[in-house]
Image (cartoon, one colour):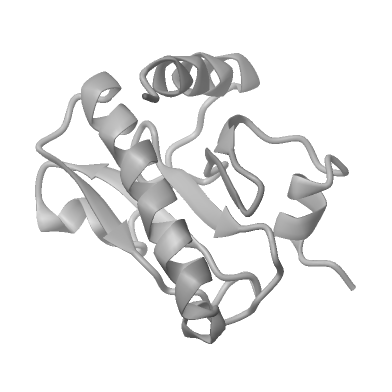
Length: 131
């Protein structure tokens, strides 16, 4: 059975897409730790990020870097933090999280809630800054 992320890529589940390439996809996390929290995934469904081929991992990281640069110009923060946990969804993914201190990446914190309209406005801002 396809992961929830594969279903998002295939358009079966809606998302606030940020960008995509032939092999990578980025969208807003619906349970964000911070405004602008983005998930970056390979389109090929692989459970563990280090099971990706070296070329796939390099492409995913370069894609994440491009998304992070756009986030940094549109979301007020000191840095864009990156973490890979990969336990909650069996599809490799990178969390890009706007942060001002290390505690901003604490996944035990309550998640933020946004309306669909608010999420789309955030996505538009980030998309518009991608170079």
